[in-house]
Length: 100
Image (cartoon, rainbow, N blue to C red):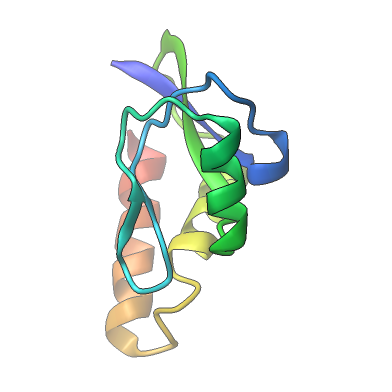
């Protein structure tokens, strides 16, 4: 399995390949996993307020850096609110990903 790296949109470059689909705040897929980024894609993502992308690195997968994991979860849960269910799900994901 190829490793992925979470990067801020401003560091993304045309030609990089997405490791995960990019969704807007309503869950609509803006770009599917595996898409190769173009200048047009990067502008489109910026227009939709996307701040973090998961990029395939081509390296062998290794456990995520805890700081990168926290940043990614912050992004994914930015609109989930503070309900008990959302907080429990986030903690379960964080625990699972830190064990991988």
